[in-house]
Image 1 (tube, rainbow, N blue to C red):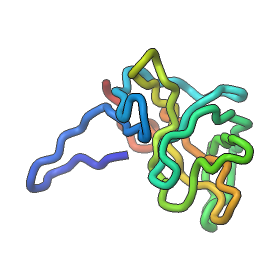
Image 2 (tube, helix red, strand yellow):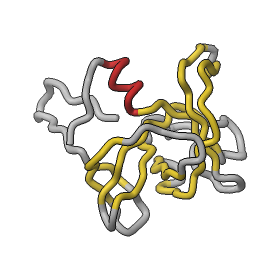
Image 3 (spheres, helix red, strand yellow):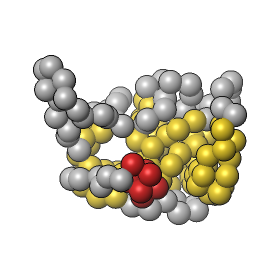
Image 4 (tube, rainbow, N blue to C red):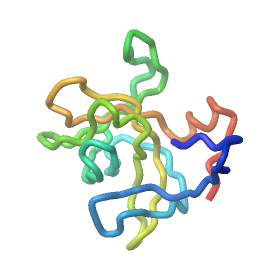
Length: 138
C-alpha cells in the first residue's frame, strides 16, 4: 500500500503492482474481487517475490496479531512453499487476469514469524476501503 501525500518531489498513485520475478514483472490493477474460501490467489512480497497457487482457507472474525485483536483476517496457504515473512506487510494479494492484468483481493498484514512461511494473513480490499474511507481506483 502506498501513501500519496504532499511531498517533494510530488508523489503520484499508479494502480500497478510488482509481480517479480517474471512474466510480467508488473501488472496494472483493473478490478477488485472479494476473497472467498477455496479461491486461488497470488501474493507478491518483498522476501519471496510473487507466488501463486495460494489457497484461501478461511476468514477469522478475530485474530490476535502482535498482541492486538484484528477483525476479519483471511488466511491463505501454500503448503511447503515460502510465501510471506516479516517485512512483507503491505504485499498485494491478487488474481492474475489475462496475460498481464490483476484483480486486487487484499493486502498481506502478517504471517508466521519463523519458518514455515507458508501462510498469508490478510485483509480484504473491501475492509481496507471501509476502514480508511477510501476507494481503490483503476
